[in-house]
Image (cartoon, rainbow, N blue to C red):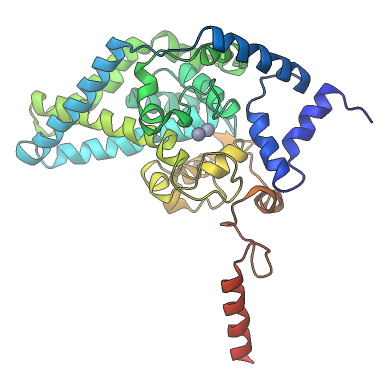
Length: 372
Ligand SMILES: [Zn+2]
Ligand SMILES: [Zn+2]
C-alpha cells in the first residue's frame, strides 16, 4: 500500500525496528519542515550540486569575536580580583545570581519557549524573562528560534552549533563566525508564531538593549556597591564579567560537552549524550540524549531527581501554585521501548533486559544460586 507523504514522514519518526530504524532517525534529522521524503532527496541532490559550485567558507564576525575576548579576558581578571580585593559577599552574590538567573534559561527560554514543554501564566513568564535577561544571552525570541533550529536539524549544516564541526565551534565558535547558508534558510522556515503571539517575549525583544543595560550590567553590579560597599571597579569585573562568562560557558557546555562525552541510553545514532557534570552545572540540562529524543518532556530527563535537575523542581513548585500547567512528559513504557530499539545498552529496564552484559548476567545468576 502506498503511503501519503505525511504518513511516510510519520513512519520515519517511529523507529519501529532496531539498528536500521535508528539510522532512519539520522535521516529524519536531515529532513526539512513539511518536506516529503521524495522532495528531500531531490533537494539534497540539488544542494549537493550547488554546494560544489559555491563552497561555504565561514568568515569571522570581528565585533562578536572582540566581545567574546573581552568577556573571557575580563572573567580572568574578575577571578583575580575575587582572590585579591573582593569582599567575601561579592563572589557569593555572583554565584547566587548565576544560579537564580539560570532558571530563566532552563525553565524559561529552553523548556517553556523553545519546546513548549509546559504552559505558564503571565506572572511566571514575566519572572522567567527577567531572570533570562540577567544572563545576557540575547533575547528570548532569538534564543528559542536558534534552539528549535538546532533540534530540528541537529548534526546537519543547518544546525547553528553543529557539533560535527568540532568542540570549539559548538562551544563558542559559532557565535563569532558567519552562519552556514542552511542555518539562515532554516531560521526563516521554523515556526515561531507562538513566540510572536507572546506579548512578554516580544516586549523583551523590543526593549532588549535597555533591559540588557539594566538587568545584565547595572543591577548585578550595583547591589554589592549599595548593600556591602563593594567598589564599583571590583563589582563590575566580578558581577558583570566573571558572572556573565560563567553563565555563558555553562550554557555553551550543553552544546559542546553534552554532545560529545557521555552515554546514549535512548539513541546511540545521535550525538547528544547523558552527562551528569553538565546536569549539575546547568540545573538539570545534561540529560541531553534523552532530551533530543523526547524534547517535549518538561523534565528534559528520565531521572529528574531534584538535586540533579533543579529546574524540574522549580517548574513543579510553580505548578503547585498554578502558575505552570499542562506539563508534558513521557511514559516509562515509551522510554523503555525507545531505549531498547535505539539505545547504546547503557539503559536497561531491569533483570532480564537483553542489554545486560553476559558477564553481569552470569554474576547475577550466581548470586541467585548463592542465596538458594
Ligand atoms: Zn532543547
Ligand atoms: Zn543539543
